Amino acid sequence: MHNTLEAPPPGIIAADNPGTAPPPASRPPVSRRIFLSAAAIAALVAAAGPVVGQATSARADWGPYRNGEIPLDALTPIPWKPSLYLRSDAVAALVALNASFRKQFGRDLPLSDAYRDLPNQVKARQDWCARGHCENAAIPGQSNHGWAVAIDIGIPIDAWTNPIYLWMKSNAPQWGWIHPNWAEPGGQKPDEAWHWEYTGVYKPTPETSATENNVEAIVKAPNGIVVHLRPGGKTNFGTPQEYNLFRDQIAFLRNAGATDVMALPELSTVPGVTWDTFIYLSRYIGAPE
Image 1 (cartoon, rainbow, N blue to C red):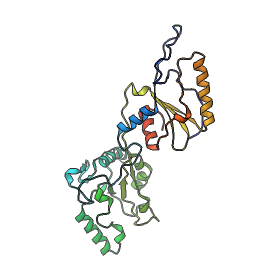
Image 2 (image 1 turned 60 degrees about the vertical axis):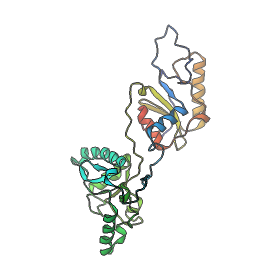
Image 3 (image 1 turned 30 degrees about the vertical axis):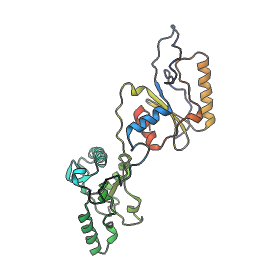
Image 4 (image 1 turned 45 degrees about the vertical axis):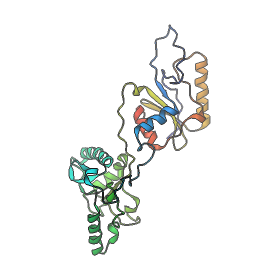
């Protein structure tokens, strides 16, 4: 982010200040926007579900089921490869990823494996050990395939320059799919270009209504920069001094009779958010990420 100072667009007031005087009769009415308070942001994030602001564990609570012992009726088939199953949220994220993949490659993402039950994990381990590479299959009961949040894509194990691998490295994380560090070349082993895992942090871009398009927020990003998010734009304040100076300028305008600008909150009350929440709010409001 780079630091900029710019006035907020006209027509925004604090949602918790309904007593603001209406504009003088000599001025045309302005289009007012809702300014989200810290409590409103917290409520919005809570309503969005646990994948906003925190990563859902790959080892989600499966109740009585253990790794590799999850029944198929508790899972969801992958639409273009229905013989393969994953956790339902992982499938939703993979479907969104695949839509973008199809635009690039003109076909579905090739898949060779997904959920792997315990007997098949035992078999995979035996097969790799017979070839002298036990490290290429997790100990039965410890694989993320057994938690239904891992896939193997249809490329060779060492295809580090394969266009599909390179596309996945650049694009898959935005849908919550990653190539784990241990599988990277020179990682903890095994080096597997085909293995990808779902982190649980993907949230579909929320649909907005005309009301939601009038929402704005001021939040503190994880890097410490205070950001004003608004439909179609944002303003970054790199230092407390920048924010407080701008807040004083807004207060001066309001004291002089301006009714089409919002009162900015005290810096100490600006809510800090995680990057997941920041991205979610940006999409919800319609601000650049």
